[in-house]
Image (cartoon, rainbow, N blue to C red; front, side, top):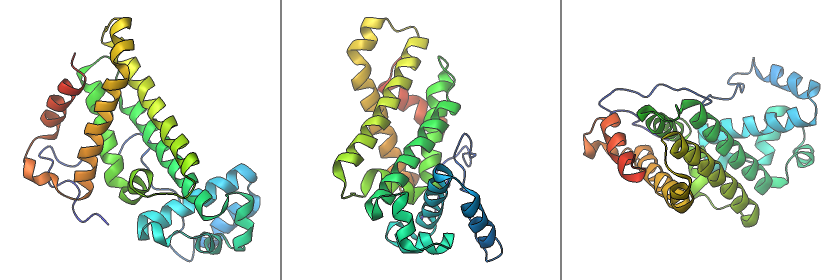
Length: 230
């Protein structure tokens, strides 16, 4: 778990925004019956979402090794085998959480971005860091935990990068870059952007950014100007 989150940001804490929200999962015995009633009344798609939400809640609280089919099923008040109708075992559950993480991250970054403005890149970048700090265990699952279903995991990662490519292309277009420049540099620009943010996020989760002693906006502006110069 992360013990230090924002001490290294001289601008103060990054406020949660976009779609970075804790799932509405029971935290007391009183709310567990409500969850189970939701399960009974839910259709197939809604039940799958409930499974993923419960799993992410356990992941955030106790880490990836604590997320088991049996524990999720117990929270929902059903037998472990019931969950196999909705996810393909333990690996399927981890893949569903991974996809959920990329959906949350991409949606929030889109909402935080203002195309064509200096705040556009910065807003998305700050949201990316906030996501990593809000969901450190989910972020680690997405990027640092191997799932046995390697091909499916690679496809999820590829779709995530394709979404980043589209966002970077929109940003470059809004800034007036010629089409031939975008076509030539899009892949590399998106790659540098992702590598830079992933490095910052990983250091932030580990509480290692204090050594920079830098204002976050100034740091990101300097970084992003080099990653995606105007």
